[in-house]
Length: 573
Ligand code: M6R
Image (cartoon, rainbow, N blue to C red; front, side, top):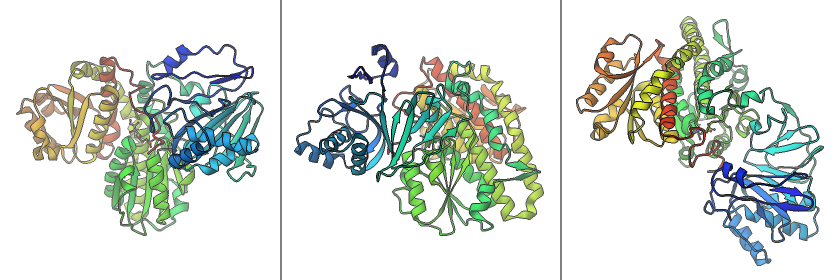
């Protein structure tokens, strides 16, 4: 929607942003404009329910990301005052509320502030008034919203990469803040109406960093960025064979936690599972790992001396944020392992341990995952050194192995062609089973998730020892099994599981270690991984699984950067 010559030009489309682009012809844009890709929560994905929404007089337009929880009562109240609703969305109540406050005689800024005071739930909102064509009002609570500060032009967006082509100066709006943005000015008020002093951040990412850098898809670019993302994540945190995490020194002092709660969603949850293996092995501290949407609704038995790690690429995932706030209410310290600078999680946690993966644009998370693993290894080694200073020499050795991981990831990337060939061979199957054990079981889960989300092939992941307890019944020549069988303490056990599959005429692909003649002789389709310490093998192995999923999607003619039904940041429950 744009505001031109005192008129509002509005266009809505169901489907892809590309379809909207084709449908738009606003001519020369002279005033402000707003747009939003809706991810349906209340009301079907239809043109009527698409944003922007308008008030009764069609002179206020509004876009909203989030969920308004008290929309039913507000809708009833507004309808009883004569407001007519056009959509089934929760969003529409906000625009009618603003209209109502204007009718009561409030100024526009005050009307927006007053409306935001009445709504419960999560929102990032953009509003334009027909008779003020050069201004956008923006409000935030619980959903991400940033303001890009340009030269005689300003922007609002959900995240920083969206504005990097225009400016690197960014204001991150806080929860319960409302801004008025004109081409030359940004004014911020709190929800109580007071003026707020804000900081303008200088973003170091270049615009090019946020583009595809010559790759056909962001996902492939981001897979290839992993060696440097891992390196950046380690940078400055390892000195003289020791891990330096001063943020944690300050937060935890000398007292180590007696239990660690790790909470996350999706890929970040898989990173948490790997983290559990690493922390328990190195620091001998018990770790519980939970999916955030489950954690927040279970009766957690709190360990008062415990602490929590929240893992999130975006730092905006609604369930993980809610879990974090619940943990804080229970009085435990929280550390966010997060990628996005200035995200809600990074600001609300007691400490943010940043992964330094740079902007991850592709919906499928890749470099964020391996950077999360890197932070988790550093954290485990930091804890281990604190809990047993006598083990320093051993830890030094382990740490030197971590420093070598980026090079090993590079080696896996050189196998891209072979993996693409494997994908060509297997992409037509409709089902897959991923098997792993120990620290590579979460990697099997991550491999299956990647395949499902971008190639739409049904994939299940199992700890290989569970096969006999049910899933082996599925194995036949129509359901290939992807076994992660690199050298580890459970290597012999994996071989047994591979034998079980082969004896049932199952099709197998195996990730194996360099020079593993035994498996090379048994399994026809193998991908050879470089030699790596078992504890770090997830970082190396997952790269092959990411490439496999990517090329399966390509084989099937799909766009891996835009998987159906998925959003990059899941900012609603
Ligand atoms: O931003 P977050 O790490 O909190 O996101 C959590 C999940 O939505 C995310 O990891 C998702 O599973 C990935 N996009 C899958 O590739």
